[in-house]
Image 1: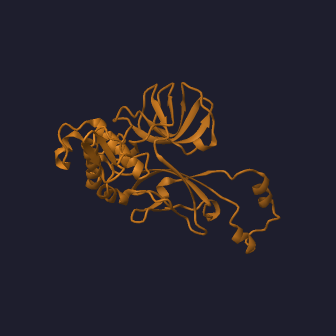
Image 2 (image 1 turned 90 degrees about the vertical axis):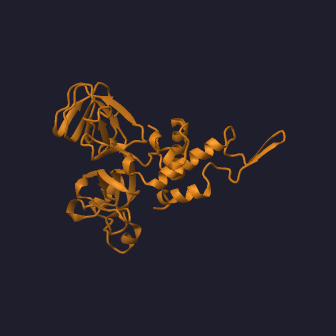
Image 3 (image 1 turned 135 degrees about the vertical axis):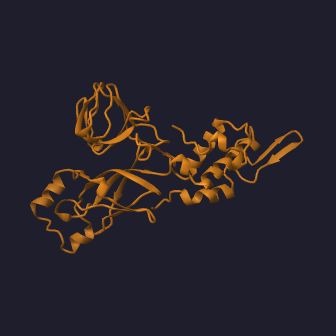
Length: 304
């Protein structure tokens, strides 16, 4: 689904004519997502409660399945599918949106087990009818290396809900090895050398601490109270449309205005001449300096 940062009823308030089309708004919204490096967009949708964030509106599902029977409520709910699936380890901890087309039943669940033609969900809160639509991958997914001796990870802002966390242990940093903190001739070292990559372990997302002011997540320790070396996060970040910051809406309106003021002239052209008529643009982009300034607060830096 395409991001859309303005609605028809708000056009006049943000300086646009009533003739503005949804296509122009969607085009401007896509340009905003590209500039701030967020393909998933900035708006999330809620689940059946109307309050709890469920999925990112700007994302498309990676995989779509249908249940062959009804889905009951409870924990560790096994759901037979009408299609076969390719079993992949990275699907453990993946999120799935159930019945997205029905707002009274929409909920996000976490995949805790995979078998041929069957998914097991960690917990289901709402009963769903047979042929329920199951959409995989509509949350932000990131893998983060944790700092040495600190169980802190940073994410996009504002983070509104952590859906799933998987952690795993690495062998340790070379600086720790040279300091004598690891015995490299024991059985653990042999397993880590020849036994393949370490396994991902589930972490209770309700135990994760969120610090909204600096985008930090505190990740609980795993077995033997040891901090994980790496975490795989699935979470939601953004706003409901009703609480979307006015700066984003105004930036969208500015881009729409630039589109309307320069019909038929590609944004990469700074000078356009037809006969005696000459048009010259100050920028080779539809995002002018003021509009970029409005969006820079929400832009993802290369190193976060």
